[in-house]
Amino acid sequence: MFKKIITSLTVVTMLFAVIGGLYSYDQRKANAADVLVMRQEIQLLYKQFQDDQDKRRARDIESRLWTLEQRYENQEMPVSVKEEVFRLNQELKDLRTENK
Image (cartoon, rainbow, N blue to C red):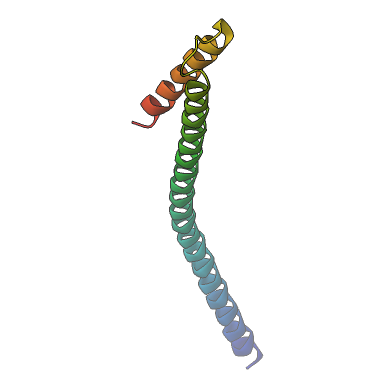
């Protein structure tokens, strides 16, 4: 009788161990799929954030260029201002080619 009880408890314990192991394995694989989905979503959000930063920077450059052009509309630009305008135009061009 005592042997039957011990054998039964051993079988039940092993059954619980197998079920626990399978549950753990399933959770790990399910989490791996979730992590992959989250990684893809984070990459998309990061790209959107970078695009927004680039658009904001392009708007700032255009505003600065417009201000300089309005300020020196009827007069000759000093060399330093011409260099600044050239640099800003180049940066704006680079931003636009990166986003294509």
